[in-house]
Image (cartoon, rainbow, N blue to C red; front, side, top):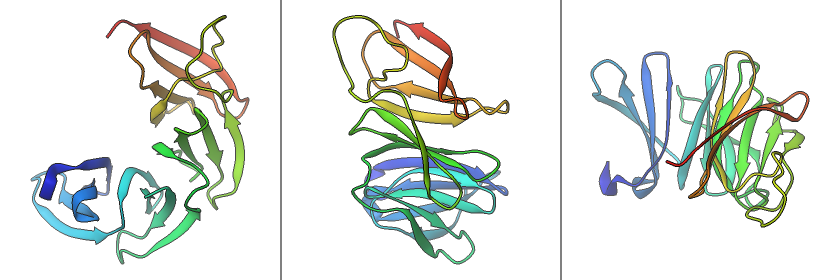
Length: 178
């Protein structure tokens, strides 16, 4: 990985996909051996997620759907619509993008149509605590029960928050000093 400027990781079908911004590519590795088996060229790749037989990737500020067999990519979310910091997908192909610009998570259907925003816009703030206001949401993961877990990139307190994406509500929070 030239430059080791890695931006995302996803696993599917016995393969690992690792985005490397320095080489404008997604490296394809054998999950058992770690041997490099291919490469998918993509401009400024970032966070990755698996959606069915496809791979979703942040490319600059766009979100694209990549066919791992051909390397072909088609846009789902146009460049400039968001400032993507994280990406996750559920079993139906719906996907979620954490937006560093608004400090929210935007939910999309499998075709890339925006469905809803999770959280109130704004970012860091002073005053009364509001569980629906996130500060630099970044890491995203969809749990088996459908909850969307979100990490926040902040010093203290550290927060991990679960959302019910269908209801648009916070369902659980975890806090800690580290």
